[in-house]
Amino acid sequence: KLYCEDMAECSAWIQFEPILTDMKAGESGSASFTRTGPSGTEEEVDIAFSPVIVKSFRALNSSNMASGVEQQDMLIYSLALAETKGGVTQSFQSIDEFVTREVNICIVVLSLLIFFSTILVIFIANRVTSSMTRPILHLLGLIKDINRMNLTEDDLAMLSEYKGSCREVDSVYQTMEMLYTVVRFANSTFFAGDLEKAYTILKDSLKLFIRLGNSKAIAVASNNLGNTMLTIYRTMTASGEEEMCGLSKKEVVAKGTAYFAHAIKLGEEAYDNFYNEQGWSEECLSFMQFLANRYFNRAMFLLTVKDDHQYPKEAEAMGFRDIQITSDMDLEIVDQCLEMGFKINRVERYDLMMSRIRGKLALIKLGYSPVELDIEEQ
Image 1 (tube, helix red, strand yellow):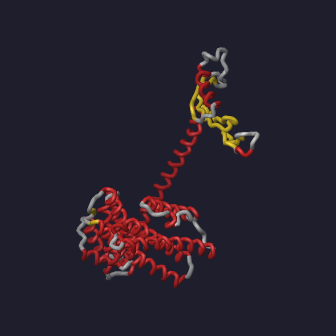
Image 2 (cartoon, rainbow, N blue to C red):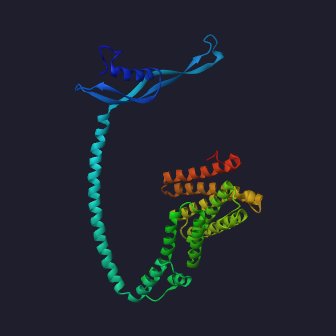
Image 3 (cartoon, rainbow, N blue to C red):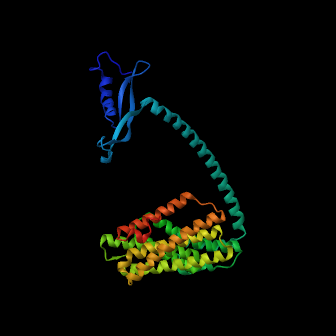
């Protein structure tokens, strides 16, 4: 309660009066005050309040309706929520105890699972390796070279071309080649933001995928390299640097154009193969979405770098064409999913459309018209 015999000298009223004044004035905010609790002891209370305001219209001249009206805000009342500090912390104490108990249980269960899984893996590995002594010993030598960073081009070729054991072991050799690339890429994450490192790693990955003949991986690496060229170009433009990663702006533009062209070419081939084999299947539509993303990436690149492109008008025209192709493919994917009864992930779809809009907004900042980019329609 806040009532006192002498309100002017009551500390509780002195703390609460400014809050009441703000509420009557239609203000919003939060504060705290002290009151006497049911037990007779003083307790601190946190309060948050906000006004309920209704917009109304008042005639400028009640005798002449043609004079129009003006909008005015009318304070109806002020709504406040109050809770003692003890009440706020009490619920968190029970939650903390519950979470601690559940975490301890999970730790015990996971420890047991890891222990038994480790025992099982060791047993199976021992049985398998015992029947493959010679190729495994050879593989061990290659692993030692990897650990010492002494792996040669011949060793890399041997990983993918080695034949001398069962099919499973041969597959392990090919997998080790892929793993080596992944390990190198994982190490590079320690240098996040280093464009030169990223560019070097992607180039090396592309070379490995080309040697493996993995067209899907080649397309992905080429697309990523194209995006890297766009980032390098933007960085050079913002910093005013004439060269980055050993490349001039003209070279960055040329390489980026080539990378995107290769990625789209391989994507179109993969899409055609899926469509010929499966028709409008979910896998086919997934490939179509990947292809649409690559068209959009190339559009962003060409429209961003067109001033430094060897053929500015052609680059701009192709960029707008890629934007249109992307829009048509995005629409076709949704239509086919609805027609074939495939489930559409609305969250992923929303994120995709927002990424499209963010990209187009970036182009608008470069001076392109919203009408040219069809951003109002999206």
